[in-house]
Image 1 (cartoon, rainbow, N blue to C red):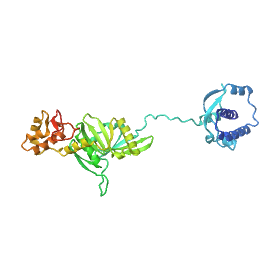
Image 2 (image 1 turned 180 degrees about the horizontal axis):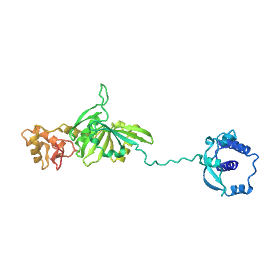
Image 3 (image 1 turned 45 degrees about the horizontal axis):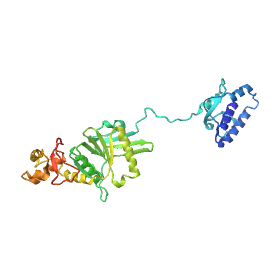
Image 4 (image 1 turned 60 degrees about the vertical axis):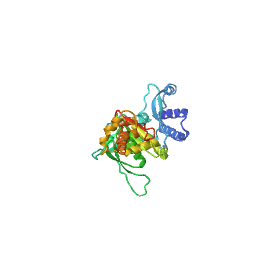
Length: 356
């Protein structure tokens, strides 16, 4: 015990150990000397070998806690130990207490945990109103475009936002929205020819990262016609740069990237595009009285023609105009959406379109 402790203390003093433990070291020396009083001196050649030929082989513990008696040191030493280095002469075996000290505590190293549990899950309601929970790694297989909203929208006097309902022509579903800005993006997505379906408040994300636990409900989930997916959060322009919103967007985007989805945070849409889409949205519903005019109008528009001229070929131009706007919404009449919608806007029969 004495030789072992002295080796630790000598190595400590030469390695620059903090001075605040020197008091404990001195007490350990005193206890060790008292404990070994009357013991025969060790072999001089062995001591020289220990000093001149040392073999560093691993980690050891230093007794650095306050010790008041030899019994405390030789008994329960768990509260007096600190990881450090040890050495002994070649061919010499450490005592039982030395072994206990050398293996009592080991430095901890952070390692990746194999087979760790998934730290992100998505909760959603299926079309049968059954609550489901799926790990993020398997979320790509779920048809969230068919999911029901995971939360309801309250309506009360004096509220700042404008909740409501929107009928989507692309899916023939009524979807709820929390704000007028969200309803704008529903119309824009409903008009987009590349969008097959979309849902509102599709799932609740329960995630965990280095910053802690977090939850978030995205505003929209979009399924494109090519099978890819897009998750959309709708925020007012003045809020997009807020730290909490930026953090939320970053976390959601990282999760979507892991799943294989695209992510976008959007604010106010481009005014010109919104004005055009908002106008045409009024004609998105199925045709009734004007349905017989659809085929003749598409035939006349095989060559590019202005809207005003196209409707003038019909006995009731105003009824034909409503049919033209309906066909434009469903992309059966193609036009330049980046330019203002006017009577002289040129349209032509599209090679493909959606079901009206």
